[in-house]
Length: 384
Length: 218
Image 1: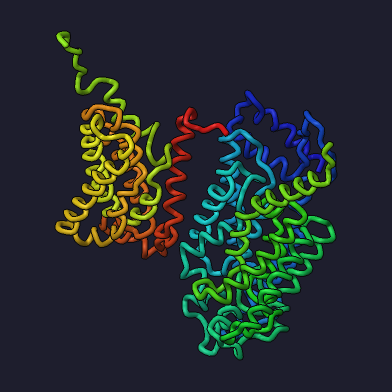
Image 2: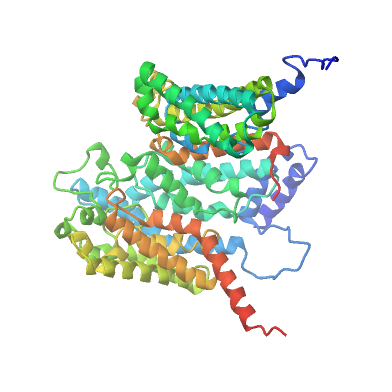
């Protein structure tokens, strides 16, 4: 580490003001803070000092995502070998999945960080860690066969329109990873929905006839309840789906990490699950078709519900900030997600739209919570 | 009355400003944010956008001149009704002409030709300019504003048609380039209305970053 520090210090002057490589200072900054804690500290004003900085928060989410990622990589291989009807051992599956997943990850980070660096250069602020989690989330919420050029366009759109136009990290209204997914969903629906895209190679017709690549949600939406996978396989995650979303257990391990470290809000996660469960129960009450009769707990383990609740809804930037607001925000996400799933045939999965919708409403919720608080306190104050 | 006022030249710098300002620094769409609804609705393809731009130009220019001619005899209390009558007459004329000579495009534009009546740009120019100015400046003002409206419409429609349908004015550019064989696909999002809003937003962004004076303080 010391020799690396020395090397960096040696080349640093070139990138400072007046150095001959000054135009590349954003790139240099990005690489320096990647390996070392930046030496710049806030110099003015009072602020609370805490060991938790952006980098620490990001790395915690990063670690929390690992179980879902590793399982997702394994599941790519598992689904693929199932679809072509071949036997394979664990490592073959994992290796196959890794080869399919890595290009997505590389594109995600390469494109996203590239844009961040360009914007940092133009706007004259430093590159920060804002994209690290987004860059990991994006490949986890897309189908494995998504063409890389589509992913590239989606990431360009998400980082620029979803984040940079609002002022960069911490200023965005919407969750950038979900903006990328929504962009893909509406732009290239043939690659983002249906029964063929979730399993590697299936869209090119590379599957045996007996294999169905339909996700549990698609089966439920088609009222084909008896072909749905068992609760057990949905909890473990050996089902077709977006790469990171299938395994309920892996996501819950991530949730435990987020909650233990206090990075994710337990109020949002709990209220999202509660809202979704309550709405599903309500659907059971007024059920007129098999999808509405589906047991309520199915909704929590199918599709992207758990992944969205744990990793997307809890985004501290785009979510609600006030404590009461978090309950409302989370509950509405759960309610809307199940509502869209069950009642809107155009959208098989409602989690992405529900979270984006509530992202937009989060500032409004916060505003009224604060206003209500002010009113309550004014009432308590005795006017003489 | 003996000393006649000196006549202003037809294209004085003041008059040219009327023509030029709405194209850029005082654009009805990107600066005043008027007429957005039609900008979202008719910009899926270039052809309807061009027709829409021409229609609005005709309506606005004629209405501006007519209102300006009558400006001294319109009783102030019923001026809005008067303007509406003029606009509605022009819109119906345009609509009928389109139905007669460009039926296909007229069908694509559907209600949006009729809705030119409610286009805020037209009412705004009549109330804000034609009521207080002579016919010639009003003519130029109408021309300038509808051109400012039109070019935004056409730029938005160009990108939406090119990226969303792979054509330019109906000509299959992407197909001729052969990019579909390389795995390229049209962007379905560009055809949906939100993308028109975002495209207009990008134009606003580019314009304000080129001319910092336009950035609003709040």
